[in-house]
Image (cartoon, rainbow, N blue to C red; front, side, top):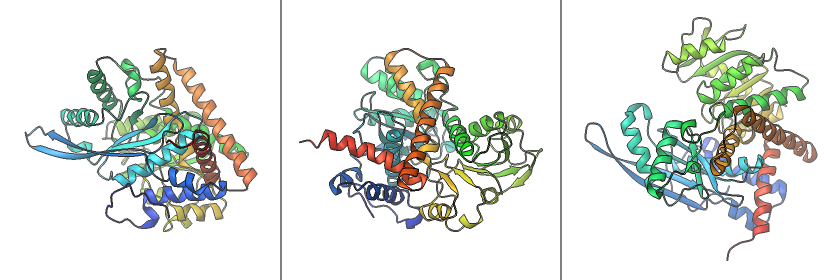
Length: 429
């Protein structure tokens, strides 16, 4: 198993759920299929830069707390680094490093001229006031000021962050350089250079990929039974768009539990209910309660894990009954579970494809920000659909040509494109 000597040791995690080891394993599999030169594999297995900064913040009670912020820049062979910033208690350097690597392959797979990066701070936003979060975000940005920029590294929202944090990051960077720089981050409010369509982009991309996968099986979205774990930004957007397309969303869940309806959930009503109940769907009157664990094993056409990683493992994989699994979250299916699903003939739409809608529209926002010419939502959505469907078709073709599963096909495309660019550019000096 590859490992990076650049990463400090942290508390050991079981091998089957360690995100970094899993990311390296997928890289190794792709490299073996592609017969990559060992030197190229060695370069691609290491992040180019790992930055950890101290973030002192004065809490509202005047106490000073010091947080650790990370930014891992994996590869910039194809273009500037790109990746989200997450605020979550479980953020670790190894997790961020794994996600940065996955972003590299995702951007290459979608044909976007970016390299992969990821950042994060280990905190739970619900325990911090808006003022505290603003001070944390601005200090984190100022500590990274030499490592980000529209031609260097372009952050975006991720778990626990939103357009609000991106506006703070853009303002902090702009104040430091002396002029407005809308291209320094994506996922911003429209008022400061954000793109129309960005909020629904990841969920819309999931919908496009599910639609194409069903069509390849001779099925339609209309009447398709779909279960979605996670009802945050991605899960709720996917649920609404699938519902509008005629699919029957039979179950959704959040951290506090889920709801199920054999006849299909009224997604607009459920979204309104969650908005009034601290984003929880538990207790929705037009459905019956269901646990997150039970949702994963429901008989359905499509299962969409849109919450955290490592949700389908070797412990529960044999109970999963879906024929298609679309990874709207990063790494929701473990390595061993993925192998079991493939052996059973279950179609697993990998995360670097299924949830790429967000980075696609982030790229479109960046392009608009650099040109100072902004598009309407219809154009953004059409560009998103084109790139997502094109990537899906390329993965299907690669899978058929090489006679390999979809996940490995996606990785061979992404890794192969970066490896080819590295070979063409050569090493400096």
